[in-house]
Length: 271
Length: 292
Image (cartoon, rainbow over all chains, first blue to last red; front, side):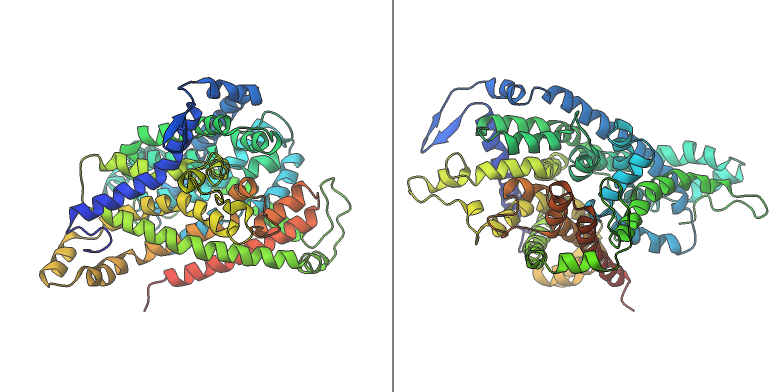
């Protein structure tokens, strides 16, 4: 541990953490300065502090506000549905004594990381078949399902670490499975559910491939809008682009910071 | 693993209904379309429905006849080989550095995660400008030199430049996911190793890494999947160019679908990629089993 951020020399690991923070944040800070109207030139600064670039985003993309709200609604609702479907299933699976859920879970993980492009086109056909293609509901359901394997995997890992005695006792007291689930399982799992929800929201908020295959017209989700904005506005200048991309980072960053404590309770199981 | 356990025999176990919503959603919106895609890759079914005749391996023959698909798979392999080891090494070093608690560690942990919170599209836009010689960091750092580099326009440097962005986005995620595992290594074991006077490198190799084996494999799977199959960043950064120097199979398939409207071939390429991913997944499942 002495090398590579070892614990013996606190200085070394602090330097490593500092370097990593700088590597992550200098590019974002560079964008932040440009968005605020400041651009370094040689050893000095050009420009003056302004918020005009944030206003200019709606000049390039008049629907930016609506797209922001739409993406928030899709990602928020899909996150709620994913967690609502994943928790009971993970709870039930965590109670199985046999070995098969332990073998199912890594398989779920493989499903979770499969490329969206491999099922996105047929999914568009399926949604067309049930009249949900190009709709808010269709996009929400597709996003919900896309994150479910990961959420199930994370939550079952979290729940499998909990002592089974409480649920056992509740059952002996005559409580039904639904009561046990809601009154014993749920309160104990709040931390894991919260951490899972944060990760799922970030993934939903940033989805690009699925919405692009399942969207027929406006409103667009933000990653789609940002891509169009970037691809078709050839004269797009850096300060406006910087303002736009920072606005799209906002909710994910705000949520992660607000949930820092909850994220600390995340358990990632090996397999 | 035992929990509430199954109810007494003889009564119907309604508790399995808890699995139904998740099962239905995954089945209907993930597994069914993936299966339809596999079937579709053997037909000529188009976006407008079409007749959907069975065409055997014609789609596979057609896409494999295009040499640029081979180039794309090669690029994806190179991108993964560059990205995954660097990201997991950096992530592990970060997790080890964060092992001892300090004031504000929770906040630092989230701040370190920031690059992963940026969407691949937004990070593509960000790095498109950062790599730019006029307004970017690189141009500014090169300063006075007239020949400020522009790696994205250089066929030799475009792919490493894309890999750099991937590492920037994924190393923080690797560190974030590895930290709980690093924290779970019992302090007693580390103390014992220290008392026995074993050097730091030996402690890392013999005490810490064996306990992290499963978690490292899992994080590696996530990293490999991300660099093999995501292309949103590349779409914005280079669009696959210059030439086809950063073309990858997922982008190839996406372009066929969205621009070329060739659904059968797009799905065929996507299934070749999914097949590769499933092979990686099978390797993961095999390695995950504890050694006898």
